[in-house]
Image (cartoon, rainbow, N blue to C red; front, side):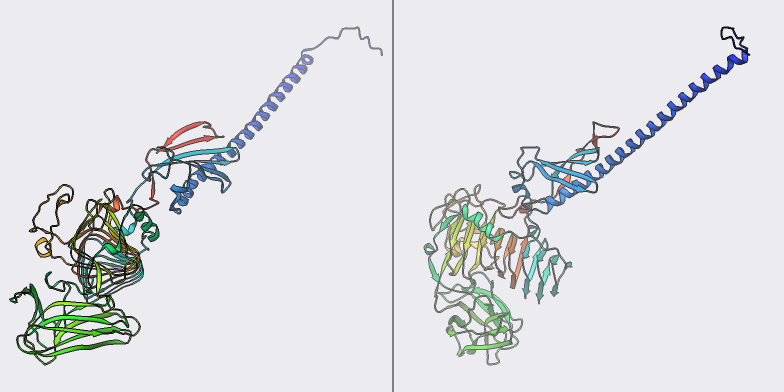
Length: 596
């Protein structure tokens, strides 16, 4: 059979439908393929977006953690304001999968060191893959500017020992080691790093205190030395040396204590024409009841001492002078001398050389009787000194201020005076001071005693700084111009200072008070009846012995601390409304928002 290709073939409807179906199937396949590819691309995009979102989340968490890292670093470095400049603070820090950079800024003047009240801004950039999170926040210093030692009225870098004393204060006392009270009353909340022992405490006692911060002694002394006017030690007059306070009984019973029991001790005007006040010891129930002074910090082992005192008995009694020592070997009482049948005023003069075993814990020099008598007797004009140094450099009955210096030139701008004692004893008594004294290398038995009216030129400055130990044996009896025969508010030196009054008479009185901060780089011994408005700070120990200490805290040193007593690193807190963020690599790429 032959096929004629020129012959036209007749197409039926069925034949025509077969081609259309093929085209439809082909188009449908193409659509399905396109949809499949689109779905696959969508999944790929979605996976990529999910990955980027996860990276941004990781970056955000890392950025927040980095803020805490920066705050910890700043809190750990007390000198960061002096050593840090604007710009990168931490770079290439790894937190999880993130790489973090932290910048720091002072938004006020770009200088961290010139004012610790200025806020700071921390800016953190955290990157994880293609995700980046940028955040910033402002922080403001807060809290007291003063070191935490200024939170206390009495604070020791080592121990506080209280013996036969009363401490009354409106703010806590603290020791960076131990506090021990013996036959004493502590009217204060009490804190110690280690132990609080003895009795009695009328308010809370709190051991396990975190160590309190004290000033750097060398830096402190250097700062005040730079602004001080020097007073030559040799320009201070020599006065008969006397370790005893209130030796002529002009300040009541200040410094004198009952011995051997509870006799009555009081002062009264003498009928003797050449004497002023005398001290009477009465209401005695045994011959061993008498009167004395604590001289623990005054004695030098192996050195010859001289003790003189006037004693009067109207009954011809046998008078004894003695000393009771407590050392590592125990307690012993030594009779230094006796006069028999004393019926009027008689002067005792005794030389003695004290020795002791180990540490001398207590030394009381006293007067009593030895013949069984219990009648009253009188004492006056007591003196104790080293035979080798019969005189002391003594500042007494003077006015010292930024405008007045009886020993040389004035310091009108700072009111700070430096006295280099060269290891010798200095005594300051019955004086009015407006300013700061810087005592360098005083002998350990140096003392500030009697009636003192003392405040600094600038209200938040210290009154006393010393690099060695010092004794405070102050009286609460007013500083009297009549008693001291001195005008304490002469021309150009009014009372109150700067805006008070001056005169030419000697009839005024002034409260015996030290108002300001007292600091020793070693130890401070407190005796007698001091009245302090401020803080007493010793880098070593504080010994309160036979004292009635009244101390009231001043609040402004903590807020505006004295030079050398400032906190170098105050805590930083977030400022509300200053959080900012920026995210890149995510769905809100480029967005900036405030976060409250």
